[in-house]
Image 1 (cartoon, rainbow, N blue to C red):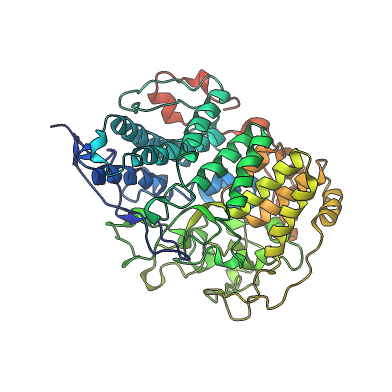
Image 2: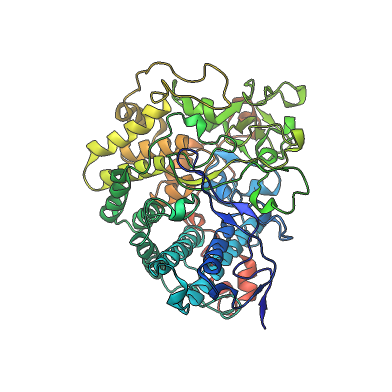
Length: 564
């Protein structure tokens, strides 16, 4: 009998995908299978559910891979494409290509994005083809069959949306099609064809899933997930009325709320607060050191990647001085998000610049800013044999829903509600939801005990726009800077800049120092980032990976994205 091996539908690392910290203790577990009989999945509903669970493994890293960046999938390229491209995040070594806009088609992490997304699509298509032929009598409740299909299709729709944001048009492999059965397929004819396929998957799932996850297992796709990503899709299509309705439904559902303390969002081994719409959870496990092979697909090197090199970091992520200095007085997102030269990491008690070698604004031969993210650097890398850190990668938060809703309100002639959404985000940012709350891990006295006055956003951003030289509407400037501060070192900023046609203004106003008007010495002295490129519109998409052009006969260099 034919067998599937390592890349089969049901291969999944032994991992836990989620547990609600504020609700129940149920979580989605995915067992690890090396070899399965072909007909295993159709023998029972339990086996079918195991097959569905295997699809969720594709959100996680692949520590067993010899293919490089797969070992940090979820962090790179997702965070790099969304943040390093804006120059708010920066890196040394070959990763410096990201903030210099010098990426090429053979960039390893772009190949990872393509390969890992299609791994999810491949598994989903196999699962859906099998599900279509399953005898209904294996189900205790046959309505569950549609729910299983809905979760699978939402995963496929999500991955195609991610690919569309990175590459534009890609080959649309649908139910039953895999890289084995369909090794040659051209890119979709139009981006509208891509969007239609994504919409069909997400609307099917939206209409069949509940606000709460199946079986109470946090980590599964829900109605909120589908509506949030549908809204994002509609915003790319400039259909702000449709997007607004999806977002309004999320808000009205009462399923989600802002976490009262911004600093709690990236706490170790704290998952599924009321703010999480979807997150990839990296749990604290029995052994977090090198060689944790059995469960390493559920682990991430965030500490090593994000710590200061002064204290063992690898230089994968520094933050710019422009970002560090951009916060208004009183905005606690800065305190909760980053430390710069002279600051002390409140978790490790390590002062930035204590070592004379690291006493300048920049460090290393590539002049990396001496600013580091507290969202991921919350432990001394390797201390107590903690190689991996149990920190969730939250791909979609309720704060994003509120700011997306604000954008839709502005675009549909309701600025009053738009500014109110921004006010709610800023109210949390200044700590006004903190009185009476508790905060884990942070030093005593971190929380506000009383509310404070928050500057009026419209007034502030009117002045900010004038000072920086933006030409877009004040509300657009407000949304971009609020997203900058709210989602720094997360997963959306560059995509939002591209979608809102704000890239050219962003680089001109936020990173004005270029090789044509400034010197390296000037920048080092003043804490400026030197920009090595002039923004080109074609770079709002990334190149189709070289390996796809070499191995897919239906895609040649003539089909490459313009400019590459």
